[in-house]
Image 1 (cartoon, rainbow, N blue to C red):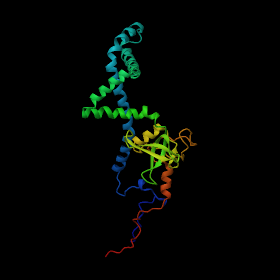
Image 2: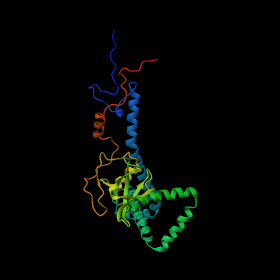
Image 3: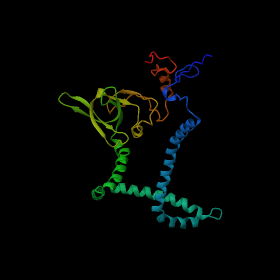
Image 4: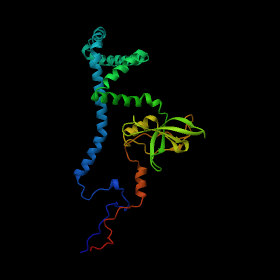
Length: 290
């Protein structure tokens, strides 16, 4: 009785090629499918849960610090304004948290205003010098400070996201154009480019490249930082580039696409159209056993 021909694992029922990332092993079980779906769900749920947890943690910490100062006047105000239909006890807690957040924002703003004065900055430098002398405390103090400086203050210095070829031709890197300079005596215009590292964009390399070696890209500064920190997990489905036109001129590029962790359908179709280089398990081998 002739046996049925084996079907190639890289072909679907219609005979179309299936990309490697979508191929399933013949031995795949329902447990494997469940595990993949569960991991996909974790990837979706965990960032949301962490974000909500951090927000509640910060709000709770602010409430525990400033709540004792704002709660007594809030209780007196609620007792004056509350009526029989709305118990005063139910209004004290949310109003105390709300005004504690307002007091925290005002306090932080006042601290930022005080840093304009020279003697306050000097006191902060002395305090930072004492803190950074302790090895473990130095790490937990400087790391958040550098990240916050990158995402806020240094963001103004990162003027535009660009693409460069580094460390050799054919390898593209995401970088930031920070300025331009003239190299004398020939007068060649060079672009000062900051090449950040992943996943910590506070460190990197400063490169000076000719303008023709720099390409504009339709990514905002914020999206560029998110792409670098995520290691490419968050990325747009497509990018558009344009020869660098200078920091004083806006490039003619379409709006940037939203960052996503999904594989674009165009990429899947492009993979399907590529020739299959993997060996066909059903094809007979030319080699004969020795």
